Image (cartoon, rainbow, N blue to C red; front, side):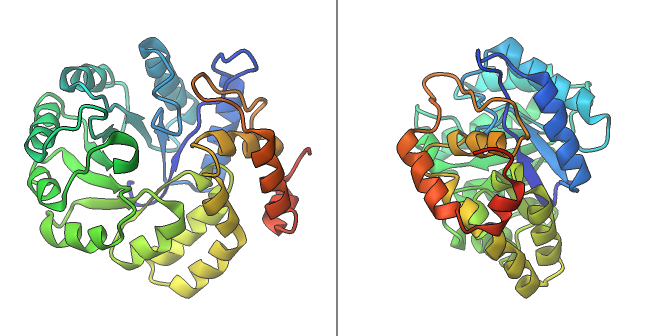
Length: 299
């Protein structure tokens, strides 16, 4: 269930910034059709930081309903307050969520002891499976392999999204954790390398626009067919690079609109739409990309 290509799903909005559930239904069907293994709803890419609490719950709930049990849903439940993370996690109990993705507490820079106690307390207050999320570039703290090892001993802490950008972490974590513990990459550009080092898949931004390709890449990699996986990867490698020309999810929403998968590329402040200079760079870089040209609906 939690191996292979997992999409970090965007939250579609209309031109006024309200959640667009018609677009949400469309992109969920797109992922079911293209064999995405699971959906992360309202994570970083889903703009968890700009949705209010009721919207957060409603988007996850509607994602669950619209998926119609055809794809597992993982709810983003991280917070920089332990009590807030517990409250959010408990809200998703007994509604059909498959797991939670819980980011390390951001801004307040906890110690390793603080990180351990944070996730331990969440684990003790829910039966929902928990996937840890380490992304130091955004949170200002780094969940180290030794701490991950201690947390892996809790039955409902089942894995980690490791997005430190340090590939050596995959081997380090794998050596220290319980055998059943799942290790997922968090950077599309190193997804194949992560799986070649023993990782179990990727929580992917690129999958928003290239679900079929990312699903095939993961399937081949997990079957150790890395050469074939890299051939497919070459077709979409530009997107791994340029989806971060501005902070995620600004570029991916712009491309999704160009592909006709969402009606609007609207975001909420402090996030703003893709700048004209970045649009020009993207169009220049992608003008010869066959995958881009094949999927483009409007320029």
